Image (cartoon, rainbow, N blue to C red):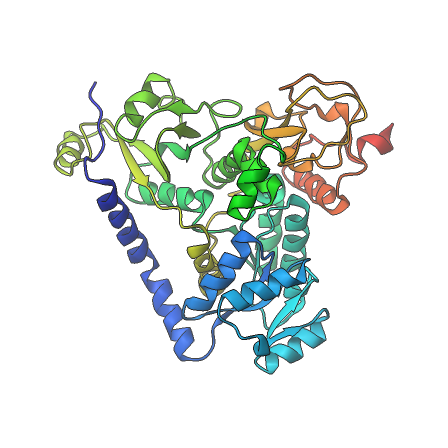
Amino acid sequence: MHYQVSKRPLAELLMLGLKVTRSMNAPLLRDLNDRARQGNPVRIGIVGTGYFGSGIVGRAERIPGLQPVVAANRTLEKAVAALRSAGVSAADITLAEEPSAAEAALLAGQRVVTSNLALPAQVSAVDVVMETTGDVAVGARVAADAIARGKHLVAANPETQATVGPLLKALADEAGVVYSDVDGDEPGILTDLVRYARGIGFPPVLAGNCKGVLKRYATPATQAEFATAHGLQPWIATAAADGTKLNCEMAVVANATGMPPASPGMTGVATSLETAVADLDRAGLLSQGPIVEYVFGIPNGVFVIFRADNEPAFQRDFEYLKMGRGPHYLLHRPHVLVHYTAPLSAAAAALYGCATVAPAGAPVAEVIAYTKRPLPAGTSLDGIGGFDCYGLVHRRDQAAGLLPIGLGRGATLLADLPQDAPIPLTGVDLSDVDPILLDLRRRQEGLFEMGTLPARGIAAAR
């Protein structure tokens, strides 16, 4: 069977993708412009002003109809630097650690910086809280607090969504607010591409992410130079290199679309844009049912593959449209514009009550902790992006009795484990895991009858 994709140059494909995005965002941009003309911008409070968060501050400041009004970071200087880099003058920035002081400053036309990560959700003038720390426990705390206070919560934190996102979405629905991850990063743009394919009547059989490098045993030490060169924290660079970030992202897509992975950790076929359909079919992945997957060899972006063979007209039309002869066809979105697009998710939440990517109900996928090296009993795991473990996405039914990577930090091993072993829940003491995160996870498991965590915690039950 013959397969092919569009022969258009990559630059032309990129422009086509941008045109599609612009057309879909046209009403949003129009309404934001109206808010700008009315002097009533959507006001954003941002928690975390590292690489991603400072980028969001800078972009939100430049999009008409949006305004970053509170920047929260534990290192206060980074919050100040984010606003200053966005063009806000030093004279217009006020430090506030309490809601009353922040409210007064905003009323006077000032922007607020704070080291109090809970403050943005406590300020009535904030329409949307955006959280960008990447830390599972911080993300869970900020999200739960914002939702409880009736604030929309838009995060750049697939690690948190992969761990307790289904519960947070249920809590947000109950509170009448939005819980979502962002546009611009792979989970958001891939979920949008799945919606697009389904919307034109071609449900995908595979939703794919493109991975450049995988170093399963990467550590903060091996990634330190790269992290410094790119202004990242070493643990973030490590989570990207060892595949944990990818697996969390694809769990988010799985739980938003109902498309689980075919196997633990997915497959990772080496391919190219021109041969992806044939290579994935040869690997048996296009007949697995709707699944999430990743590939090596396509430089960047996300893609979906759908099948259309019910009517001869499809084959004729798609061949005329330079999509190939089918029956499988590939749609590729090459641009991953991260923080440049992320603020539009805050706008969609505030203006329309719409989530960019959020769980659709009970999870269909979990990200499970595996050992990076032989670990002795008594090891207190350092969690995502550390020296001890990496995460692989599983179907929910394959994850029973195993430790979610998002609960890894602080879990203590009760027995020796070899390298590359999935960590069993019966083999860890969870007493030192962040209590709010653990409570949210238990509530999630009760809500969806998942039953993988003990009711009181392993240490307390012994």
